[in-house]
Every structure is written in structure tokens, then in C-alpha cells.
Length: 314
Image 1: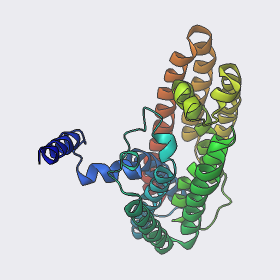
Image 2: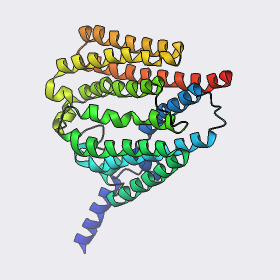
Image 3: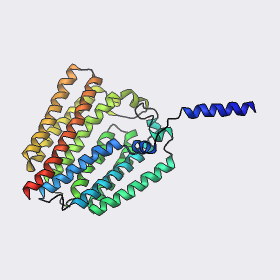
Image 4: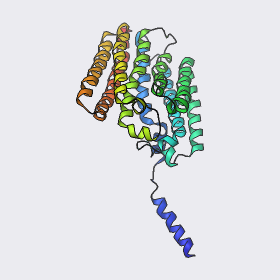
């Protein structure tokens, strides 16, 4: 009898250590709500640029835009869910991910799979209503993120970031194709190229800041395998390419081109000057913060310019 009481007391004490989380918070962390928000801005940039270059009123394509938002949210959320479920072993080692619901168990694996699959199906259906081509790019992005990136390259090669960047560059294509099926405009190529190139300096900076965690988890990130110097050189190569890619917007707007050019050139100069004056960890933190400002300012500028500029061109 006394042993049963002791067991009961130990169970009660253990249960008190389990964090009490509300369902909305658990779901938000599982689907990576922060990534969804940033990718929705990129998707809207694609839609705004398509409206502007094709002289289409936003009101004319309002249903397509709404379904693109809904579909993108669900598909990106599904990708985040599948990634979290598959990477539980890695996430449990790293400080920044060890408290994810899929690691702690508050998000059961079976429910997560059903939840993620449902979001993927409903999301792709919503994108198909907007435009079948948008649904194709949604499916392509989901596949690349889950299979070539999460299940294969992330654990095997330093080029995992490059492979994952293709998936990360799908939102602008989804936004564009929700408006028009014409994919020959240089502005669309600019959006896609910038989104691909931006991701390497961004994620390299994270990998430097979390170097020891990635090393412990045996994730072959570039700084872990090749060192800081190689990462610095490769970062600058991508930043130089990003500066050149700014001119792809010249056929759309000189204003957008200048914003993209100044942001990318400033990032490139900051990288070179900062690396000479700072230790790698501090340099990486500066690069990470600037990367967030870079992509946010550029895409918000495109969204505002595209939607407002459309009215003046009708």
C-alpha cells in the first residue's frame, strides 16, 4: 500500500514538470508559423508583380489571391510538420529545437502525420482552385522540402542548403501563377533567383551561430564540415550573385531594381568589412539580422509597389 502511494506521488511530481501548452501554441510550433508568415510575404510579392506587369486589377483576381493565401499557408504548414516529425532525433540534440512539440511528445506522431497530410491535401486543392499551375509549384516545393532536403541531403551533404533553397523559392512562383500562367517575364525570374540566392548567406549565418549544435547532431552544415573561412568565401560568392540578380527587376521597375541593388550591395559590403573586424560568431549574428531586414524590405516594397502601382496603370 505504501509503495503504491510512493509511486503515485512520483508520477504526480513528474507530471508537474511537463509544460502546460495550449493547443494553438502546439500547432503553431509544429507548422512553423514564423516561416509561414515570411513565405506568405514572398508569395504576395509574386502576385503583386504579376498584377503589375500584366495590368490586372487586384479586385479582378481577389478570389485567386485569397485561395493562394489559404493554400500556401496549408502547404507550407504541412512541410514544416513533416520536417519536424522526421527530424525528431536531430531536434532533440539542438538547444533551439529540443522543446518542439514533436520532440517533447505533446504532438503525437500519428496525429502529426494525419494533421500534416490533411493540410497538404486541402492546401493543394485550394491552390488548384486559384490556378492548377500554382498547385503544381506548391506540390513541387512540398516534395523537395520533405524528400530531397529533409529526408536525404540534410543528413548527407554540405549542399543541403542549396537543395532546400529550391523549395524555399517556390512561394513567389505560387503567387505569380495564381494570377497568370505566363512565366516568361524577367521579373518572375528575378523573384525566384533572389529567393534562392538569399537563403545561403541567411542559413550559413545560422549554421555558424549554432555550429556546436549542428556538430553534435552530425548535420553536415558548411561551417561544420569546411570551416568558417570557406563559409565566408562562399557567402560572398552568393552575395555577389545577389547583387547581379538585382538587375533582373530592371524590366519591371527602376525603383524596385534600386532597392534590391542597394540592399544586396550593402549586405555584400557589410560581410567583407564585418568579417575583418569581428569574430565569426558576431559576424554571423550581424549577417543573420541583415538577411531578415533585406528580404523583408525588398518583398514588402514589391508588394506595395505592385498592388498600388497596378491602379495607376489601369
